[in-house]
Amino acid sequence: MLNPLRALFAAPFLRRVGFHARRIGGQMDRHFFSSLLTAITGFVILTAVVVTLLEEEKRTFAGFGSSFYWAITTVIGSGDASYVSSPGGFIIGWLLAFFGVAIVAALTGAVVGFVIDCLLKEGQGMGAAGYTDHIVVCGWNETARDLIQELKGDEFTTKVVVLHDLERNPAGDGVYYVGGDFTSTDDLERTGIREASSAIVFPSDRSNEADLRSILAGHGHRVDRAPGAHRGRGQQPDARPPLPPRRGR
Image (cartoon, one colour):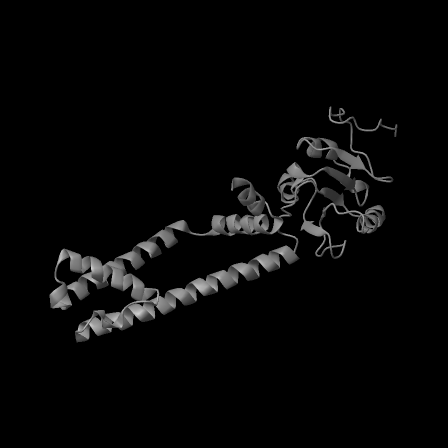
């Protein structure tokens, strides 16, 4: 049972949703939401106490428990309208019903807002790939474009993630795009570099000649360099696997 669940939660879509949920959760004011939850709970308890006092036959501890249950079910829209018989009880029932509608509307708005935010961030390259055993293409140039076209062939099923600092995906459909700088550890993490099978560096110009080998090798991944890609500055070769011998400049 654990393996199917593990496979389910390892799905790229769910991993992306989890990434956005953690991102939005980190921006929320938790004190506000804890105060709101406390206020809602207090309101439901207060209405249960009032109904217990207004309904003479319910003025017992067991009656309070029944009133509390009725108040909760009324908020979620399944309360028994015949539970109360006094005018005050009817008014409280209406208030709880309106309160429940407001809560449902707020939750619906929050879910819709979350979905819209996720779609916008994904379109802007601000999401996380969520893949495993994929190829990460760092940077973009003509050689990268030719490589992506070959990798899109029918016989090649490995997922590809492109990391570059453009406003939109330069690789087109079928390739996941992460907008950012391939010298940034955070942006590399969003590509799933730790779980990638390999990474290929395509500096767009010589100004990108940073110590790319140590950045990617520090994540324990093999770094491939396509023909025409610039080499980084002096760096000792890592142990797994050895990089091609350096050419003199």
